[in-house]
Amino acid sequence: MNGLPELMGVDTALLLIMTSMLTSMMTAAMGIGGGVLLLAVMATVVPAAVLIPVHGLVQVGSNGNRAFLTREHIDWPLLRLFLLGAVIGAVVAYFVVVQLPVEVIQLCVAGFILFLVWGPKLGKQEIPPSGLVLAGAGTTLLTMFVGATGPLVAAFVHRLGYEKYRVVATFAACMTVQHLLKMFVFGLIGFSFSDWLPLIILMIVAGFAGTWIGLHLLKKVPAERFQLIFRILVTVLALRLIWQVYSG
Image (cartoon, rainbow, N blue to C red; front, side, top):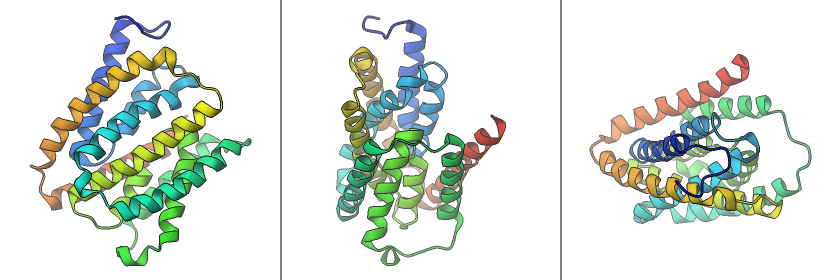
């Protein structure tokens, strides 16, 4: 396989391509989890210095495909407010020089996820526009340091009580704009994607296939079961963050 990054074998590249397909299928069918799982697999074979930007560009393709295929279900007013906040978060991230310890960030994210998913239910009318902007800004700032803030964004979208297709579509759109802004910031600070581009393109293509399969599986998941699976899966991901902190 030509165009592989230096020191990466064909077997490793195939592992990443297959993982991209399976995790995209998982996110399309369940609404959440694929990005974090992909990050966990990539962390075992991809150098730490390039992990977050390469993972982010793959996620642009995965979430962008899903957003396009479900575009009629996207909450566009919410997306515009989220985008406004995301731009603010990206600007702040560019100028941040002091990075919080990863463990502190992970614990804060995990705690907030658990509160959003299992805390008192709020109606959409109780979430002001400023709250949507703040969600965009905060999660975009965090993604520059921890890579996969999908569970936090997903928990926030889930909080609004949407039906399953609107959850998947709106979440995908929010993550697409967030990862695009992350790529822009990493580009500004000098990261070069050229060595990784062939592998990234193959992972995005595989992710499109996984998304298509996953969206067809989503049709077969009852709405009530979807909400339960979604909450359990997000909770497991949050607990995984806590476990990583105390097992390291």
